[in-house]
Length: 290
Ligand SMILES: Nc1ncnc2c1ncn2[C@@H]1O[C@H](COP(=O)(O)OP(=O)(O)O)[C@@H](O)[C@H]1O
Ligand SMILES: [Mg+2]
Image (cartoon, rainbow, N blue to C red):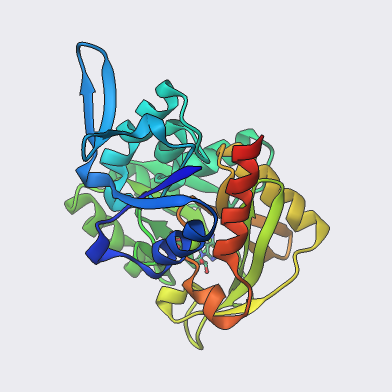
């Protein structure tokens, strides 16, 4: 069996991609293919090659597409869809998952609770929406990670400055209800019909964002059956068999804030002895057998 992991170049390898590659090599003939080195061809047929080798030959392809590589990731996954190569999600998922608003829309269409959220392109419309929101309120960049594009704003002044900055930078404005919570979010990592890891991320003191990147720390947490159901339904809503679903527990119930098709495994693997990468590869093995 041959599998390929599509990701960065070898010298830019992250902890997660290296771990997946390491575990994959124990089970299959596995290789890393840098997304940017793939060649797509149309006219006189169509093909997708790397190093003169067609990607059609792989039994499974595990993409690691972050927001920086989504522009090339989308056509690559679309070709693989058309050629019938197995992988955890279709091309449409790349677009949805790398756009926080489209993700929430997809979740809502599937009856999954999310924070009340608005999207607009103009300063006037944004100020009109914000006139009716309680503080704190959240502004987010549409595509970002690690909490870096998320502003939790406590004053009207801060809100107006942030809107001015976003429109100056020609960014669309996503305005999201802040769900009061004890400074932690809850994550379930899905691989097929299994939750391969679940944990809380606890924000560092004085910080509202629980991302590990923002100083949060992971702590193993068993999901309630209600949370498990939400996690599986959210994965299904974005059509991804492998992903992380992030939730916050508000006083009116759980809200899903994000689905991540490219979850990092470093935090959880270092904090516990759970071999998440091996569990994901074991799911891939079952998929190939099906
Ligand atoms: N609506 C919300 N209510 C409360 N906290 C939130 C909300 N949205 C995000 N957060 C906090 O901010 C963090 C980052 O937000 P998120 O949308 O997941 O962006 P990123 O993609 O950068 O991780 C979350 O992990 C959570 O701790
Ligand atoms: Mg997040």
